[in-house]
Structure formats: structure tokens, C-alpha cells
Image (cartoon, rainbow, N blue to C red):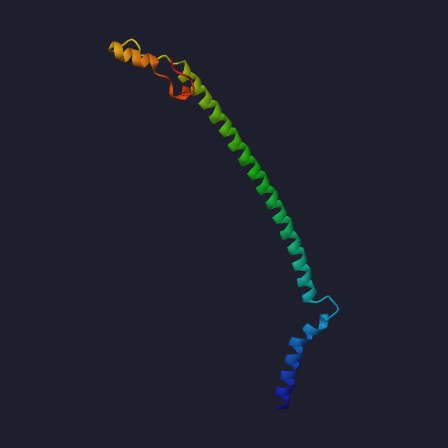
Length: 117
């Protein structure tokens, strides 16, 4: 019986001794975890800052591309309007006299502000 109790005490001491060996002097696992957490937080904050910069750059690039596309679209519309304004009505000489007169008096839809004769 004494051997059993001695063995149990020895086992308990064997397993608990390493926990007391490091002591509360700041060199134990607790301080290592705190330091790890601090460095991890620093790294994560740095990564978050990098991501924010990348997101801002991507957004600026997207806005610039959208602006360029809208400028190109405006140029295309202006060219189309010029072509329409220069177009001659092909059917002016066709049809009855009354129809010809009506076509001659007709205005283009984009010139609605001009006064007709």
C-alpha cells in the first residue's frame, strides 16, 4: 500500500513539476502566447493596410477605365450625329408632288428647335 501511494505521489510530482519550473517570471508559455498574439496582430494590421491600399488602387483604376469608356462612347455618338446631319434624304425625288413637298419641308428630329419655313 505504501508503495502504491509513493508511486502516485511521484507520478503527480513528475507531471506537475514542469509547470512550476518556468515560474511566474514572464518566461512561461503565457508570456510566449501574449508575445505571439502581439506579433500576429501587428502582422494582421499590416496585411489589412496593404489590402486597403490595393483596394483603393483597384477602385481608382476601375473608375479611370469607366471614364475612358464613357468618353469613347460620347465620341461615337458625336460622330453618328454628324453623319446623320450630313445625310441626304434619298427619296426626295420620288413619289407624288405632294409627297415630295412634304419631304422637303420635313426636319430632322434632332433639329426640332429650328424654325420651319
